[in-house]
Length: 184
Image (cartoon, rainbow, N blue to C red; front, side, top):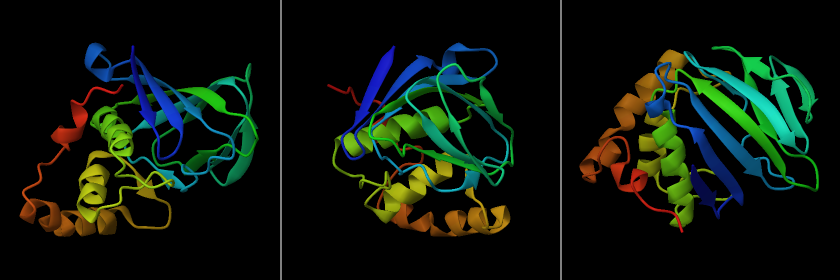
């Protein structure tokens, strides 16, 4: 089991089952986010991915399809289909741990690993956003995620156009320099 720490946000991710090891391409992770963490409160949707949430410990606040709810240990797994708006956060004074499944995973597994390693290297802020424009663009290109309210075609056009920034800096798509780092 691979474990990743992000000092910028204080959270931890464990890869329970890599999408690379599964024929169905599903990624299964366990995430622990600290008390009062709201870095994942950006209301978004995934055009092609289904995401599930199951709380192991604590209480996970969510907004799903416009409704606010709280997931608790023992609750049924919440399934968020493609194109459904959602976000999550921890509004309690204790950490929350949940299991998430993402399928088809596509490049999200590498994007998550790169995010945690960017945090480890001090290149992320406390809102889990890369400090450099090049890292933002390269990371966003890897995820199947669209903020609600922004047309998907516009977002893809903007990213495609702005990709000149990291390319002029000699950066490689997929952030390979952050994928193969070993966390302490």
